[in-house]
Length: 130
Image 1 (cartoon, rainbow, N blue to C red):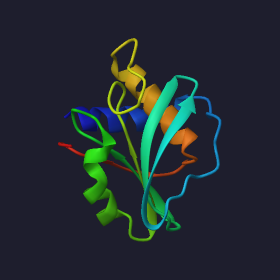
Image 2: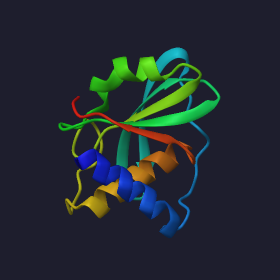
Image 3: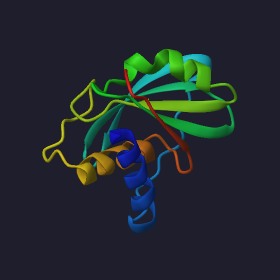
């Protein structure tokens, strides 16, 4: 249920929020997974990038606990012809913990991480487990 709430909030906030600074898209290379720590105005966000295709990217969110490392097998399956970017949730992996643990704060951090990864349009896939 939390994943649906986050997805709905990400979609709703996209129209209302000012456009964040965009970085060049991160790429891992065909059949590879790269780990990165991205600096954002809200702290650092850990990501794992899998694949290098030109298809629409997929943003993959882990369940709780929220480290992206547990999603490598799923990311490899989804990466055919596209990039898959799995994010560590705040307080997990290397992502800075939230100072205010609310849904809007979580969505702000995720939007900042997605923008720092150079992603504009994407499909969202959230895992119930990680």
